[in-house]
Length: 411
Image (cartoon, rainbow, N blue to C red; front, side, top):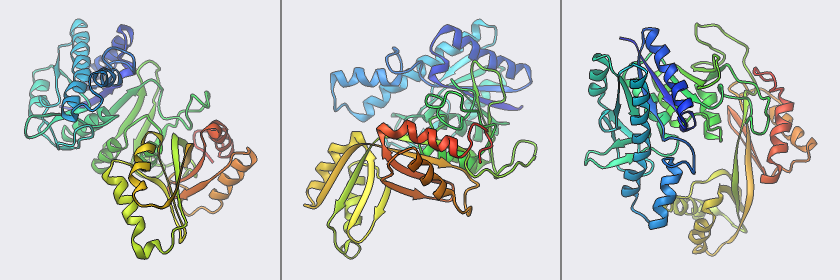
């Protein structure tokens, strides 16, 4: 019995027409001899009746400090509604389907409400459903603790559900359906004609996901990479091969090799705040940096793009956490400046490691486009630059042109 996990995002399920198009992908998989296992997100986007953000907003109207445990229980309803409706679409089309919650699918998590992690999956019930010739339609984004409290896996958690199920079911591969026909070399909202990348490595897509590309959750990629589970990013409405994600630089399904790409694509994160702590002396000796980052972590503030020197500590945070960071750091009585309105733009490519001149090309292209750069960081698979939100579009276009990303192989 060859299983195939197919995950459909909320934008692919927001109306009757799209749901029927999604159902056709499931039916085709079945007709090809696979046992499809469907994973669904909540229907639609913010403003739609059962979307996650809509449910959050309704709860905040009642109590802005609502219990995280209660909030998770409410948010799980979005996926439950979606699973039932999609199962009934399949039933109407003559293919018997059964909606299953996370706990009915054997998904056990820790009790970190709002951002829980999967501890284990017992797939026995899902397998039993499959053996009866029934298509399981599983709620993404949710699980249950050992104490039977419903939890959610964090934004994008349905991807994690799909890949984790694919791993325990030993699926042939996992298909992630979305509203674009695969991973683009740049955000199509900024570069409308950005081509689809046909092949990516786990490392490349993980970097892009962590750096702001929203096509798949990085935790899902990490599971796939550990299990060597092939991923396909596809469009619900546009026919095509999409993007295949597998191991190895330049390795595609079937073993064919292609040239290593210096830069594969561009990702970005907007609405960042730049925090600068100056006038600091001997912070290594006094362990001040450790104290700063520990205080922020204890209060849920994630830091990024960190710069440390003998007299300056700098980093960026999400704009939404600015007030929290100011309050937390005020007790240290340091010279602290916090400025909003920044963005981090990154070029990603598994082939850039050890290649001289990539940073020079990044800096030169941004300078030519008159895009100010306030801070940079480099790893073996990405180079990130801090600029202003207002300059983000120009930065993306400059880097897109410099690395010839109108050609999906990059340069």
